Length: 226
Length: 251
Image (tube, rainbow over all chains, first blue to last red; front, side, top):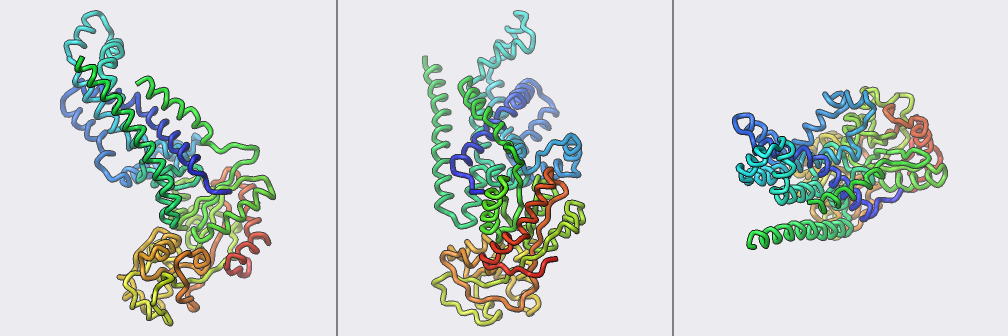
């Protein structure tokens, strides 16, 4: 079998990054909402736990996931019994990138929620809105820009994640090899030109993602000025 | 936000195709880095012959064995030594009777093409500042080289000069790029070097023996066994010999 093409590596990367972002979106928004509303020691603990992937070396996060999921690991045994293969499949790439991107979604989302005037939320409740209705009809529309920024940030991180991915998904061409891994692989077997082609693609993607967030920011500025 | 979601959904919707499909299951072979070209050629021949798709993941045998032990969904493992296969056998992932050990190789010292270094004897390695070698703590080629140099009483003095790499092919690209004064690799790797030459061929090194076996954890064990039989059969042997491997008496 021939080596995967640049395009197929790019598409695989795009798919797993999009999946990872979609998976963490409801969880991350929920966590951000909780952190923005609640105080106390639990908040600090939860906040620290959720931020760990941001601070720990990615390989450390990868190793923790590996220990959890390995054949005789706590979760691995359950998955094995259910006949679900995760490690060293594309699902592991999604998992690794999701965990690593999670704090990048939560932080801007939490800030966005915190910036909402609490009187607006109180007003929503006084008008008879249930908590979820207030969240959906008041909080979300007021904070969507922060959520969008967090989503884009998380997606960008997911596109380029390397350390945790290589620990739990390996570097299997056509199956778990994303752009970051392929660049690494090609460089270390001396195919620098082929690796540089992939770098070129990542630069184009970066322009697109950063461009999109710039457009969001500019619209925000225009609206604030008006 | 809606537009972002739409794009993400669109990209993710195609993810169903991430699972390998097709009439015949796709076999995943974990192979030692030194086998890259031979196995790719044999994989292509096998697809042409049987219609069965074979995918490869190449790397240090130590790394691949570790991944298999952790639960990687490989069907066949082709290790550059027998120790990694022993570890899998001990873990119940390989049956002793399924192992095929018929392939050998030799170690060589390579230097950049424009290097003036002369290596007439192993002692001459002591004159080189940096020598790339796949991690001698785990990777087969590193372990073979360490054994060889330890036997000569040179290892302790050479060890500080060793630049440990991920696998034999990273050592080769390090010397190809001129980043090190020399690299210890297999003779078969020398054939694909672009800017490096063989300066010394090891004659008194430890015996090198590859090992291939289908994995008991494979979901396609019959297909995996058939592929191993093909690799160890006449077609496999001819390909490996063509690439400069030594085919030894079958076990």
